[in-house]
Amino acid sequence: MTTAHAPSHAPTEEHVEVLIIGSGFGGLGAAIALKNAGIHDFVIAERANEVGGTWRDNRYPGAACDVQSFLYSYSFEQWPYWKRMFASAEQIFEYTLHCVDKYALRPHVRLQTEITSARWDDSERQWTAIAHDGRRFRARQLIVGTGGLSRPRLPEIPGIERFKGESFHTARWNHDYDLQGKRVAIVGTGASAIQIIPAIAELPQQLSVFQRTPAWVIHKPDRDVSEREQAIYQRFPRLLHAQRLRIMAQLEPRSAAFGVEPRLMIPFEAMAKRWIRQQVTDPKLREKLIPTYRIGCKRILMSNEYYPALQRPNVDVITGKDGAIVEITETGIRTADGRHTELDAIIWATGFQEADALAPFPIYGQDGRELSADWGTSPEAYKGTCVHGYPNLYLLVGPNTGLGHSSMIIMIEAQIRYLMQALAHQQATGVRALDVNADVQARYNARLMKRLDRTVWATGCNAWYTNAEGRNTTLWPGSTTEFEWMMRSFDPDAYTVLR
Ligand code: NAP
Image 1 (cartoon, helix red, strand yellow):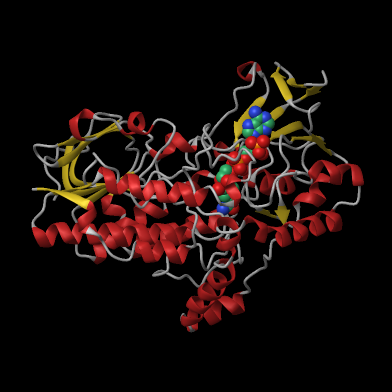
Image 2 (spheres, rainbow, N blue to C red; image 1 turned 180 degrees about the vertical axis):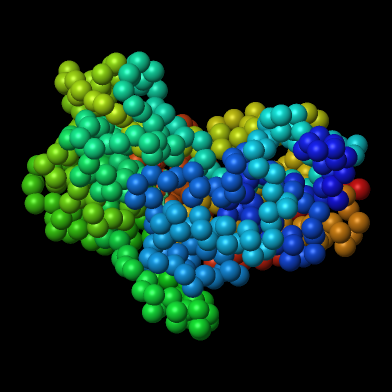
């Protein structure tokens, strides 16, 4: 129920059963589950002026998902209108809007509502969240779905603020800036960059690609989904589920190579090397592009156009010790060899501040403790979802829920099913709050870390998945099926009851 409406203004305080923060796949998925369970007393706080998370923000040229659309969508809301096997960001956003409309979520959404803090009130057994403009939300349950990749990271390179030309991060693309005929640099060669480079390569007079570490890039089995095929899916929706299962069955066994035996990656590595040899004719360039770490340690990238784009006469790959960026000047980039590249624009494809994103604002739990201070550089949760000392708090895409091999939507749905059972348990038993036990959380994470030590991500490649101490705080070491199995039923014994 919403209370205390101030006349003609936004209410200054709303009381709800559940507050969801973020309207990406996580937040919206949770909202749909609440509605399906007959819980309508919830609000979704969204800091932007439109719903949709990463796919609303990441609109750089070429932005698309590297997981097939039939799997990168809710299992309960299969969509027959995908135009490509790997959908564009634009179409994923269209799908998001479809879900918002179909499940009538708009009335629950509070746009331009950036939550700046949330505090657990132990006497009232409820959360109070405060938005940037002072509005308050009181809620029994708090679901944080702010996503791991929402805060752009700019590198700490001396002089970065001095550059006088145009510069922007991939997630904040300046669509008004015309790249045609300009001297452009793109810094970084990760998942975003390899999509952007082929999409823009023909525009600039000169495109300088600053590569610190080459990425493993493999063939992308992408294709158009014809209108005829779409019509068949509309007519026979069960085929959508069959497609989904087929893709899942194809991807799922790969989790063993990531999480159980990194040597199983060797055939993939051979395949990727073949792909480079096939696509890159110049041996010097090829040498620059072959990674030296085990494939899978950083995200495996897929593109059919990346290597051809790098071979265009107006594209230059600057890499190696000599190519390390040492300084940004008013007019360009200086590298370790003393060379200065004159530029009109710099595109930062340098990733996201993932650790901060898990607790993107202060979250105060019992006894005034604060989540990011509790965590330090090692975020951890029980089953990636609940944290001791923070009752009735559920993190979607929380610590160690990320994947290298399949769709995050599967993980999100498993988390949502779990938390919905926790809510149902509270309702059935008349319990006002649940707090996961510290020893349960510690044992869960000790087991997880042991497993992660044996994974491909522990083979040494300095990926963003691990913190400075080498602890992997990001990824799930198993298959999605294993995660679903672990989350299949709520385990009240792991929790302390607060009446
Ligand atoms: P990223 O994978 O973290 O890549 C950042 C790039 O910037 C890396 O090549 C990194 O080099 C480089 N870099 C960072 N600091 C640098 C510096 N000071 N000098 C030179 N280079 C520097 O970031 P992203 O490409 O934005 O992708 C982030 C994540 O988003 C991905 O891992 C993936 O999970 C997700 N994503 C997914 C899709 C999708 O299709 N589903 C698409 C895009 C992104 P090093 O490797 O040496 O650190």
